[in-house]
Image (cartoon, rainbow, N blue to C red; front, side, top):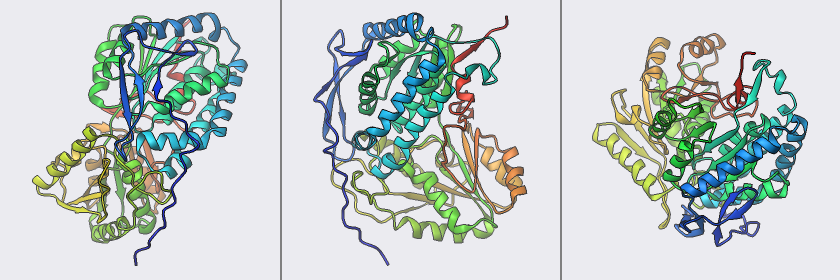
Length: 480
């Protein structure tokens, strides 16, 4: 029996989107030197939301100079307890403006409002609260006795979790005494610009946080700037490799959180109903646009028919549509370019002989949408099993023994995350010790907490964000 839901749209009255946004440099919004702009678009409607300034090389230099001055004169000299007060203040303002930020994130990104409201924004505030508590305890974090901040941190974040990725990077950087120049993705700049307003509201000293908008050219200017001391990047493996080449031979610190092709492994003793919910959350959360998405489903051979039947039945209940509707499970994908990329991979799967199943649902006439798609009959040779799709597309593979599951899960250039579903704790621990993944979830998936470190191996990058480990990414250790 299918259930019909009455529309329950979230009001947009809580959000005021300006027609034009400048660059946030040295505590105020300024115009770019050459006046170049671009537009940001609502992916669910294709409507232009705002005109945004594009930072050039001179603008990047202005931002880095402001951050350097703020670091040397104010922020690095400020006691940790005082820095912590600013972070606490920012966290409280984020909570106070949480509804506004959630709506703005959904408008600019296309993700369902219940994900923005119930997952992203609470985690944003939690990260600032967590690192506010660390600000006056850095010397007790186990990083050594002679540690100091890098200085100016250049941070580049992706479009899938714009404000959450900002929090992952800015909160530990400020807690440890660094100043920041951050560039959000060009398709989702609005919540980062709203955060600039929050910095003003919190009376953060000018230059401590600078936010510049632009495309990859702006990002390259920032990474290559000689006065940047630390680079932190979250995004594609291809761009991460280019950044690593750019900073090689320099004094700059580097943290990379890149792509993934996570294996979600279901054993025959797993609680099937719970596993199905974990599979759905693992790959269809945020339309599969998650670096740690469980895009490879490994199911023990004896239960593969039961799991696929239960999964397809569950997927038929998902609601695709208006991201602002509180009933929506599947929102819009980020852009026309990304929409084309996902559909290209779906065609690859069909051309290589895998069996495709797509959830029956109506697709809105405007916007960029991809219905939940499952491929069975997949082998490790298929592109859809090897390459990151970054969309709501699941590749299902089978295994017979735990050893085979480990071999197939590790047969990937990536090593960001994995999931294990089993009622046997000994089996779970045995698997976790052998999986080459930075994060392994047991009987759950996509579970995040500011106290827990996150990061990968191999082509998924290096360094950790979150938890005590996240502090170390922004501290230099010295031998005295």
